[in-house]
Image 1 (cartoon, rainbow, N blue to C red):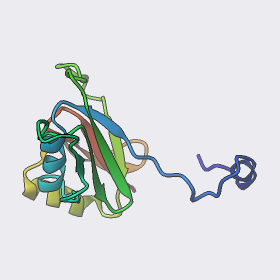
Image 2: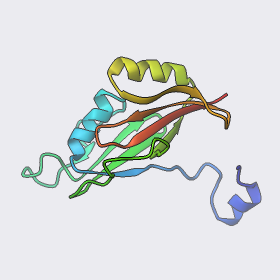
Image 3: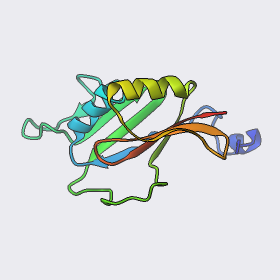
Length: 144
């Protein structure tokens, strides 16, 4: 549902002033960020992509990967965040794309774990679901 212009103005911001970037809790920040770079095709800044406060912590404590206007953050957690068994319908991050078939083909070629193939959903979006190395589920979708 689109926000009315008068509501945006009343909140003191322009319609373009906000963007959402999920923060996912993971045990190994660097390994996760490199997976998103190598398998999911995100950009990982080789210098600033993973914050490593000391040489004793090579996995780092915080990381950011980017792809277009999407930034996904990773924050270190001391224990597993997700339950081992999840319902098939559970999702964590939804990414709207312009060409879902091309994204699907690229991620398939890169070896991503696709747990739901391209599907035309009843709510008018063609989508597929990828599960990352931590069990987080990313949905890539495009309106029909």
